[in-house]
Image 1 (cartoon, rainbow, N blue to C red):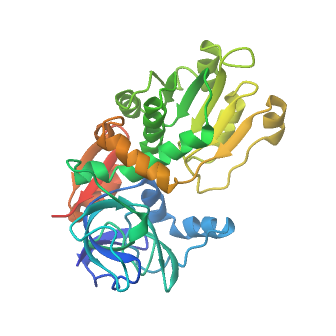
Image 2 (cartoon, rainbow, N blue to C red):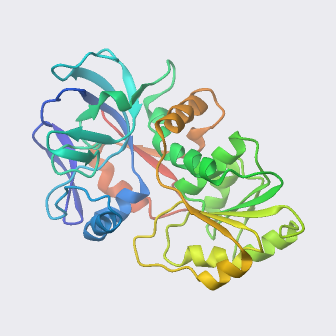
Length: 345
């Protein structure tokens, strides 16, 4: 079958063996569309560091970084068959999205970061049926594949549990920042201010509903909160760190006024530190947000299908598998792209 394979930091489109036959509770699915995630961009050149970080946090994957991997965890697919001993919940032919986790006789696997099971950059995948959700009629495969990244934003907003009045700054308006902005506005929260050095990303933030966008080179983060009167005697200052850059969480800590809140959504793959004395004296609330719950995933799919989140505004390109390597390079230009989808005929 056709797949885009990552080897030693290089992507090639080639023919590979089909995935193992689905086991009990699993399905075989045909990939329709799959998004390219920022984590894929990082992992391509830093697979060893990516896996070592998971191991340090107790979430080790049985992945050999020196062996081939087929990325792709933001998928929409069509069910082809069910594993033996499986009472089908979703019939063959159903279009689905789902959580990219797989448990098999070999142990836990993360779809898109496994040596054994290919992810959504391949024509066929094995998936866990109980973690799948049927795509509502009429929603395109491309938009359905946007569910996973937008669910990350939904989880971050749920974790923050922002109580009005609050002045909310989203630092970094790449795909994760856009997902956070969309989730905040879908819940009627605001004002939401998107901060990014890139004019292109600020434009995307406006399209996803940001009440205001700011170039931090012109107006620093602390000044934004001050202009809105956020602080101890005004609305609460809330910051979502969505850049994934080492040291940026500390930059937000330094900018937050007393009693502010920081939620770190994008993961820096390099060592980073927070000034505990500064956070202590300001009495800040600091939290971290990873992935999503099944309920949040389902709700995000509904938000997209029913128009509460216009995910298509972040979709800036679609490529065949043969174009994935070039798409990875194109995503390094924030003025052109937010999200590129890989499509299979």
